[in-house]
Image (tube, rainbow, N blue to C red; front, side):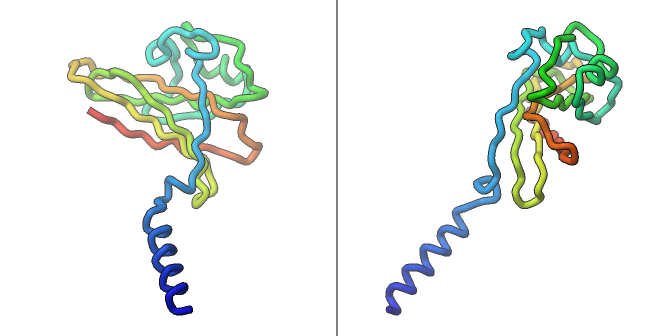
Length: 149
C-alpha cells in the first residue's frame, strides 16, 4: 500500500513539473490574405491608420473603411475575423510568423506575432495581419509582439 502511494506521488510530481502552461493551451489555425486571396506582400501592400497598435475587423465594410492598399478582397467574414496592426521596427524585416492560442488560464485568445529582423538599415513600419476563426460577440484577442534578430 505504501509502495503504491509512493509511485503515485512520483508520477504526479513528474506530471506537474513536466506540463508547462503551453501544453494546456490549444493552438488555433490562422490564415492570411496572401494564402486565401492571393494578395501580394501585405507587410507593405495593406495600409491602415495605426501606429504600434492593432484592431479586430469583423465585417467587409469595416475592412474597406479601415484599410487601403493593393489588397482589397471580398473576405469571408462569416468564417473569419481579421486582426490587423502596425509595428514600427528599427531594422529590416525578413518575415512575420503568427501563432494563435486559446489561453485556458486567462480565458482569452492570444495572437503571438513574431517579427524576424535582419541587418538592413531600413526601419519599416510594417502591417501585420491574421485571419482568425470568427469570434463570439463578446470575445476578443490580445496581440503579443516579439522581435527576433
